[in-house]
Length: 188
Image (cartoon, rainbow, N blue to C red):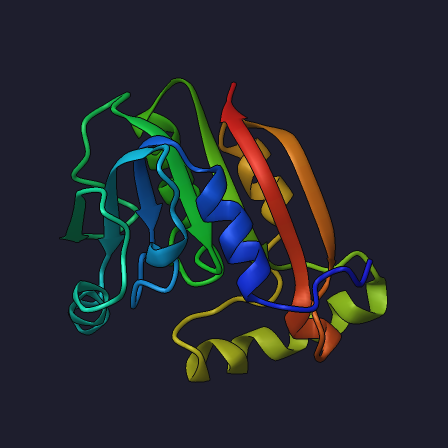
């Protein structure tokens, strides 16, 4: 616990671990784009918010072809088994139907593909979870639908993923908002 001191480092680790044809769910303003490595042959950035996609179009990026697509994670316009790596960073908290989105992520992954994630969510301590549950309804209204209390490991496993590696811990800040999950999962 307590090994997350900088938001950039997890982003860099996650993007650099991606390879092949990559789908980034919730590309947002493009904060991860500069961190992808030479092992990425194509990047598809999925984002439902047009304003954020406009920002991503102007973000620094790698030399690899980048296709930015305005679409929901719950209904991805991506072919079955066509993606080598799915990446999510601080995204699962705000997807309205996260179970459907993870089912879609599993659908688009090739056999042997992987899902790389850096997400905040449900903490292990009962006192922190109590606060997360009480704060989430108001927090969702002021933070674009963000849930403080989603159990990322449970979301992945109940939607057909096997967690291959995972680290958890707190970033600096208030505990109800900063419990992190970082790792990789593969379709079962």
